[in-house]
Length: 411
Image (tube, rainbow, N blue to C red; front, side, top):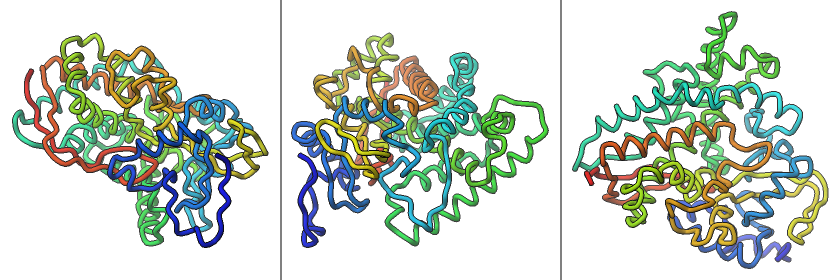
């Protein structure tokens, strides 16, 4: 299917294949429309949505094609979400929303924080903090897994990465939630509230930056920025943009995959039992959980020229939503894709971290944190049992969980 011929009277009609609708994710019913898109129209034009017209790219192969052609499909021309920038929006340049060559220099600046040697250096600390949190949890009593485990672990990690004051670390969670909520784009009052919160974030980090200027380099992200040619002269908005990128990226991916570990394995008790019986499956299970959850549903690209994708004519200026959440359920790549299979042979081929030059710079750290959490659960022979209604994020960008009542038991 290509563009649909629609007239003005049809603007209020809901397109059942408009997969940007927030209720699909709030109610966890996004799977069916994406299955239809993959089967009938892998590159599909949504004429009317609350984010304007856009192309939905829903299968694995064309998403990889788009990601492999950054000169044709730009990250910078329209940003990285299907919510368009408005004239009154805060302009926050960030390297994920830049094209080459600027993207290259800024990414290189922060990449040393996520090298294999840095992962080795951080492992002991991550393991110690994971153990402390697990040992503090009640067994046989209900608590919120999202708040006490997923958020706490990822927020502690962010605080370490930024050398951020420990007692204020929940500010990072707060700013991340405000920055990553794509639905705010539709509400002028909430947009203004977000502006205030982000300026507070900028001011706080500005003070941290000033405290490190002229000092010897330290292995945190702010010091790395200060001591780099590519980022040391950023203006305040570019500094804020890159901070928000690293906060949301470091927070949401890991947080929601940790929550998917609890929720997903509760849905597939046979696979949970296999993982409990064989801790050697943990590294592969980490990849499979990230694939199955896909913590960021989409990234957006904007065509810089006319192009053809899967037989569809893309016009210069067109917006494309790359639905990673759907590509990771593409049965031609991942058979029985709706199921968690802890020893899935090609789990590592998932697109949850993107592909190409914009592949997530912190992917290794996310994998490490999730893997250590599962290892420490296995050491204690702890199992998570979901006990009540799960509350999900109602949005098509961050694909995650707000609350998850659980009880721990031993196996």
